[in-house]
Length: 235
Image 1 (cartoon, helix red, strand yellow):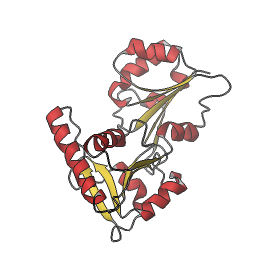
Image 2 (tube, one colour):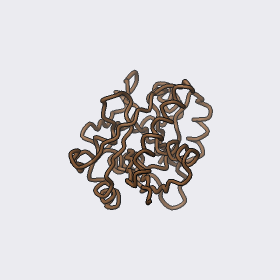
Image 3 (cartoon, helix red, strand yellow):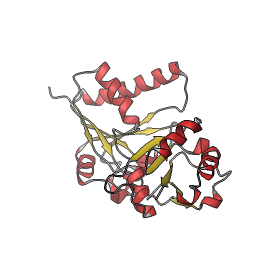
Image 4 (cartoon, one colour):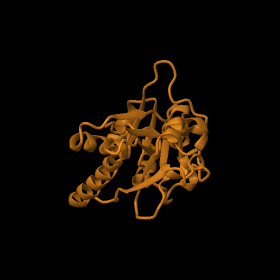
């Protein structure tokens, strides 16, 4: 008997019109739509992006809990539950489309899910559909050309290691920092020291109906959403 395929669908940074034609087609063809969520009963950001295209009466909606914790036992238990829930549909011959914001192969929940599925059920066919990432969306919304000619560009998770952040900035023409909310003020101090505050832009939930483009003088002490990007273009 045919088993189903697990699809990792990148659904873009926030605007539902920024999903690809292929991702849209897979949404229509797949009988099961899986999406990540933090708490039982809550919608994920990816779910909100695609819900305009989905009639829940025609699909089986599979919300999977991925807790925000570093406890390894809790993580292992919940991730295993998610893989088993998906496999329960796959073994019935049903394709499962797992939606993730941005691209499924770039800082995505899908990466660990895919690897665990391969480990637990190596017979399951897995395909991914590329999506527009938040750094692409941010550059376009801000009107900033990230790279031209021989420019060097980096996309880096912001960390508390400011010396490493300095080295990244010094060695690239443009940098997109993700996960910047937790070290925002330290990053602003560094950029001020490097005389780059005027070259710095921050956008939250880019291209979505909740998008916020921040002014630099509003940032210090601000509580940014996790889905925020800082774009630094040196010249």
